[in-house]
Structures are given as structure tokens and as C-alpha cells.
Image 1 (cartoon, one colour):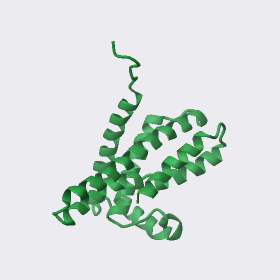
Image 2: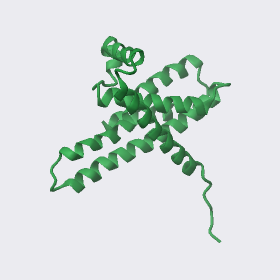
Image 3: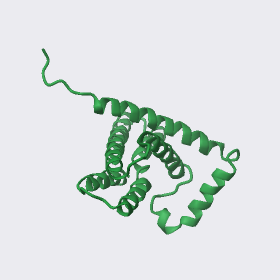
Image 4: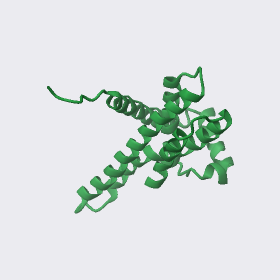
Amino acid sequence: MFFLATIPYAITIYLTTKPKLSKFKLGFWFVVWLAFLPNAPYIVTDLIHIRIGNTNLLWLDVLLILSFALSGLLLFYLSIIDMQLIISKNVKRIGIKLATTVVLFLCGFGVYLGRFLRYNTWEIMSEPHYLFLDIIGIIIEPFQHFEAWLFTFSFGGFLCIGFWMFKTIYDFPSTKSCK
């Protein structure tokens, strides 16, 4: 799973090496990036497996899963910051903050699709009809899919708060010397 979490970051690293991107190429890479992006915060939900594990080495399970989850979140937030810069250089007149918030909540929904409906990223290409039917069902009948909306907004909110904290720390000017 951690390998899948590195793909969005690898995409943004690749895109930052391209001085000029056509809107078509940027759109293509953005869609691929967005498809893989929920894999990074998905690792946080792997903490659910701790309750199933052996209690003798519980501390080891916690350390292992938490280290992957935190690393996944780090790559997730770095990737979003990179994509913000890439888009702001190549596409004018787009609300980066609003677009970022939408992406964070879409990731919350993507994590729901993976954790609870057990969809994988590659099923976008291999069996898209089942995925899209489930998505349309969730949108059309929101009261029958209350858990989907609750998780999406809760996890999306978690990602928004985490991004705000990460960006605040990331943008904080470091002091060169302490006097």
C-alpha cells in the first residue's frame, strides 16, 4: 500500500521538472494524480487492524502502522503543495484554496470507496461501471448512504485540518541563527 501512496508524489516531482506543460498534459496528469491520491491517507485507516492483532506485540503493530500512516500523510501533503504550485503556474484564474479543499474531500470519499466498498485504484480502468454505479447511488440516495457521507465529510475535514497545520509549518520561515 505504501508504494501506491508514493505515486502521487512521484507524479508531482516529475511535473515540477517540466517548465511548460500543455493544458491537455496537465489535465491528464492531474486526473492520474487524483486517482492515486487517496491511497496516501488511506494508510491511516489501516490503524483499524490494530484491534485484531496479537496483544503481546501491540506496540510493534502501532509503531509500524503509524510510521507508514504518517509517512503517507507527509507524502500526501507534499504532493498537494507541489500540485498547487504546478497548477498556479500553468492555469490562471483558478481558486487554489477552493480547489484544494474539494480535492481533500474527494480524497475522503476515495478512502471511503477503498476502505468500506473495497474498491482499488485500478478498478477505475478495469471495472469502471461498478464503481460509477456505486458512486451515482451514493449521490442520488444520500439518506440511504449516510455512512458514506459521514465518513467523507469527517475524513475530509481531518485532511483539511491536517493540511492547514502542515502548510502552516511548511511555510513558516526558519530562523538562520538564534541570538
